[in-house]
Length: 297
Ligand code: GRG
Image (cartoon, rainbow, N blue to C red; front, side):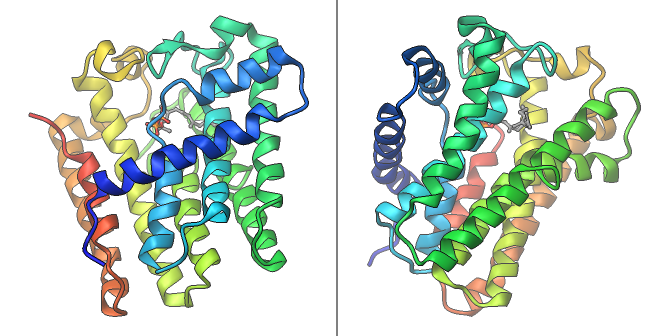
């Protein structure tokens, strides 16, 4: 098969991920207002990087991109969307705008926003639990996802972020916060590919390494964009980090230093793909995804 570019890959699989999300959510036997609140944020225009990364990892490992893979990918997007709803709440980041639209609690009120987040979080595991893959594989995926999303992963990172607001963090401490907050779900996306394709240990580790660096690059990029973009471009408030004295890469390293750190992290992610290349896998899709972080001049 000829090499497929990232944009072709995304254009082909995005509608399938969307269909999978809509299909599952629309059939939930829940109050219409709850479903509406859940679907409002899922349909608010996310880039779907995490589900696409799951599918790209599977494709890289020569696995099948079938309904089961799509459901695994979709369940991760449900977790991500829940985390955004809760992150935007007044008690957390207190944001009015997300994905270019009013945040969930601005439309549905805080109580329903909390519950819509809870609903997406639990539905993610319900959907994943129903995937038609060998039972052992499903259990492993459930376990890895719970670890990544929970108090040893994303929830922990979010707490580190909140606690860190009171003090100036070192670069290492900031990286640790982000490894949880942003990195854990992206690492899981890669792990999901390895679990489904039953990749050998060194390949699993290489992909996880790619995911860790991808996650770090993602956060540095997000911090840089907060400094250099407009609200219109990002679809959310900008320059909040500086205004709220948040710990960020540009804050610690300066903007130029953050650009350098981003370039180093992208190089490390590319380097992480070497063992896969040496084992004969076509890593072009994962390598091309790193171009997502190209900062426009
Ligand atoms: C509430 C437990 C809990 C965790 C929240 C995801 C998160 C943790 C906070 C979001 C804050 C933030 C701006 C993190 C930086 C990186 C990030 C996750 C950006 C948003 O992800 P994208 O760019 O968003 O993939 P879309 O809208 O495209 O899905």
